[in-house]
Length: 183
Image (cartoon, rainbow, N blue to C red; front, top):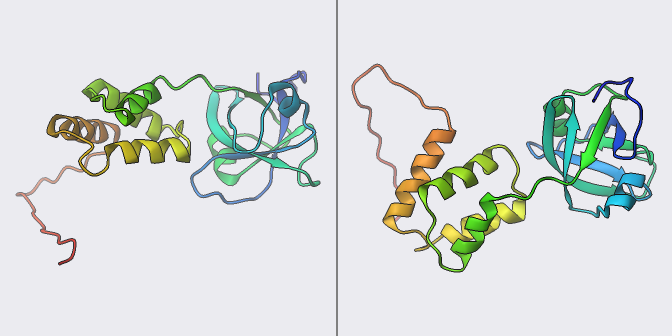
């Protein structure tokens, strides 16, 4: 799957680079009359899974009604193009992404349920891998804002963020810098 010589099936579209910089957000542009859009019920702002070979990403769909992309093409933003490692004309498979198990803990938090350390690890893993939409990210941040987190939850979130990121090691004595947030 994913080679330029692959037989075309109903869920595969030819990749084309549209040259649109969406910063770090993968975006796919598909024609309104695209057979994949029509058969799968995809609409503007739908999150879709794009697969090429062993690479897959979750991208936001923008529906095009002009000639920017043909009905058999998936126009890829620069971010999506780099992430998938495609060449012009390669096939990409377009499908519905798997449900986000981590988001159920965010919904629970919105309704007052505490999040466990493993809940935070799962959410942060999905954030780092780009699986959450902007609105899902906003919901997570809102659920945690203000006095939304207990001390235990704050520690768990911090640990999950540390585990997901890169750590710098200084081979020197402790370096301390005090920052002020105004006032």
